[in-house]
Each structure stands twice: as structure tokens, then as C-alpha cells.
Image (tube, rainbow over all chains, first blue to last red; front, side, top):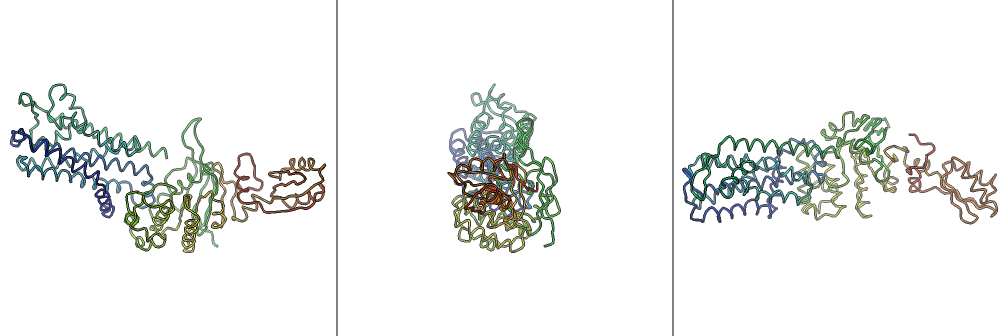
Length: 253
Length: 311
């Protein structure tokens, strides 16, 4: 692992105030508004509460935004000729991917750490293992969205496209049963959207694989196999898309 | 000088695309460059210079032909740190500082010269703290040069290295490059500035339409390609016949007539001079070397077959 490169990547990100705001500030703010304050915050979700349920969603949203940005920037860098500059050095492609992956883990850990700290301070409750398991699932799962950002960047070849990819996560979060609990046909559709599996999996330790109908308070079962299938299929789709786009880019050179 | 091959290209062809729209960027190029040589690849945009250099650097693979760089394949030579390059455009992260960029690339080498030394050799010590995006085109080009020095390469490849530089920056750049050449590095550069080839390269390879159309010592290329421009005066009623006579010959280039003065370009200037003064009864003969600029146009234009080209 090239630690100098990792350090410089992190320094670049630290200088980018706008990105820091959207990956750390915004999820923290959203959690405080929608998770910490309202009167439903203390409602029980098995051994935890609703604040915890929302906290995991917001931390996941921040982590995804961060890794989507990392993937997207990598695509832009490639197109601007940075991969040619690196191609003149002994550094191999897989070492570059390793540096970017490590950067993504660090930058994804940031919103998770901040939002979890806010959660702990403002009444999110769950057994200790739920905190740990959900955080691990969020960090590992966030790496999938580096592929999402990478594919967007490679396909549309502009920084605006990468911003759009980050922005699209808000919509996909609503569609994916993440910000507000869905029911009926909306929930049925949600199971096919790319963010559903990631956040549902992170919440599994809390919810035991169920969601609540906010109107009636009834529990709706979310089978674990559907969650796992969603994550698996979307990982394959995004990895396939990124690989195909990288090859297309290479043959054009 | 003993001839150690540094770059060997044999029948290199590169075709982009397929079918009727396929573009033949490089078309059966043969080239040998020895260690320690300073060679200019001179040609207009689209001649195939960048594509050729990309293949030497292992960025692109040839459709046909073989490439050997320092006795190995291009990718291995680059990974061994024996080859480096100053790329034409892009290749920098705009939000990094100059010194950070050098640190980053230095970290990819097992042993690299110190960052301070490289900044000094490229003449950008005072820019160290600036962000890349705040540097001028010429300054960014010097940064790319600094990055190339980190490899401590045997072979340095420069693709249009002074594009975007003003006159002063260009002179400074070539002065720095001369220092590197004196360290025994092989330097190959692509340019369409004729003056740069004349000033800096011992040898020039003229490239047009993906082929080498002339190759030799830069001074020789200039003489051979352009030949000379001969101007003489004639009796007014003989001028048309003179022009007709000259046009019929295979060893004459561009012919111009202004009143009783006729000028003609030829690589075969001695014979043409005898013809003008003897058989054609001309007088006031002037002979001047044609500029490399003119040579270039003559050699690289599609409709002109060069006499005496080695390819």
C-alpha cells in the first residue's frame, strides 16, 4: 500500500469543503431533524428505537455519497489523463485501486462516525452488537457505490455527471425504503432498487428483518434472502458496468 | 559512437476502428534510435507522432509490427523506471499543489531523487506551494518535466513539450533539457516547431501520414529535403518557355514567376543552375537554402513524392 498516495488523497478530500459538507454535514443534519427530535424517535424497534433506525439510514446515505464521489472522481481523473501519468510509473492498476479503496473506507467511516456519535448523544438506542454490526455493514457495503460513481463518471464523462450520481442517491434513498418506511406496492418496488439491500442489511441486526407500517404500526416481514439477493445482483451489475466502461474507454485510446 | 539500440520499431502499424471508417494512424513505420541520441519526430498534426510515442510508452499496442525499448517490451521498460515522458496534455490533478504532485509520483518509485532536487532541476522551486490549477500552461509543462525526472530515465520522451509556452519559457525549457541530454539520456521529442528540431535535435525524422518520409542528421534533412531555391532572370519572350521546360523535369519542386524572374526549388541545385545559365540563357542567378519550413511542407504534402527519401 502506497501510504504517501493515501495521505495525499485524504488531504485533497479534506480541502474539498463542499464534498465534506455533503458527506458529513448533511447526513448529520438530516439525522438531527428527522431522527433525534420527533416524538416517534423513542418508539421501540425490537430492542432499539426509531432514532437508531433513522441514524443507520443517514450514516449509510453519507457513506454512499462519499464513495460515489470517490468512484466518480477516479473516473474523471482517468479521462483527464492522470491514468496516463501513472502509467509512466512503476505503479500498477491494482495498487491504484487499493489506494482508492482505502480512501473510500476512510471517507465512508467519517459520516458513519459522526452520525453515530450524534445518535449516541441524542437518544438512539440499541444493544451494543447492533451498533457494531450495522457500522461494519455500512462501511463494507458503501464500497459498492464507488462502482456506482465510477460507472457514472465513465459513462457520461463529466464532473456534472458525478455530482448527479451523488444527487441521485437522495431519490434512490426514498425509493429504497431508507428515509421513510414504505408499504404495499411501493415497498414491493423498493426491493428492486439499488440502495434497498445495502441499508436493509445494515439495519438487519436492529430490525431482525422487518419494517413497520407507519399508519397501522403493524410489522411487515422483509425476508433476508431478498435483501442479500438485492445486494448481490446490484454488486454484479455495477461491477459489470464499470468493467465494460473501462474496457470501452481503453479501446478508444 | 558505438550503436546501442534504445528504440527499435519494425513495421509498426496502428489502425483505429474497423471497416470503411478505419483510420491508419501509423503505417508500417521502421525506426532505430540509438542510446544517447537526441531525435526530433517532426510532422504536422495527425501525422502519427503521438500514436507512435504512445506505442513506445506501452499506452497503446500496435496493430502490427514489433517494438523493443531498451531491449525489452515497452511496458516492462516503463515499469523498470528506464523510460519516462512529458505528456502533451492532461495528466495532472488540478487540486494538488505542485510539491504534492511531485511527492505523489515520487512515492511510486523505489528510489527517486529528492523532491527538492527535482523541483530545482525543472526550475519550479518557487512554485512548490501553488496549486496545479493556478499554474500557467508552461509551468504545468515544467511540472510534467519534473515528474519525468523522478524516474531517472535512460530514455526521455517528450510529446510537443513546449506547447503553450511563451518564448522565454521555451528557451528555459530547452536549456534544462540540454542539461539532461548531457547526462547521457536518450531524448526523443515530437514537435511541429521546426525551429526546435533545428536547434535541439542532432537527428530529425520527418513523419507524414504515419510513415517516415525522411530521416537523417537535422542539417542533412534540411538540405536534402528542401534543396535550394534558385532564382534567375530571363529575356521577357523566353520566360514562358523556361517555365515550361522546368515543369517537365522530375527534379524540380515549386516554380514561381514574377515578370522576368523565375524561381525554382530543387534538391538537384547544381544541375538546375547549369541548365538555367547554359541552355536557358538565364542571368543574375541567386541560390539560397530553402527554409526547413518549406522543406517540411514539401516533404509532408500528399501530392509530392520526395526524391532521395530513405523510406
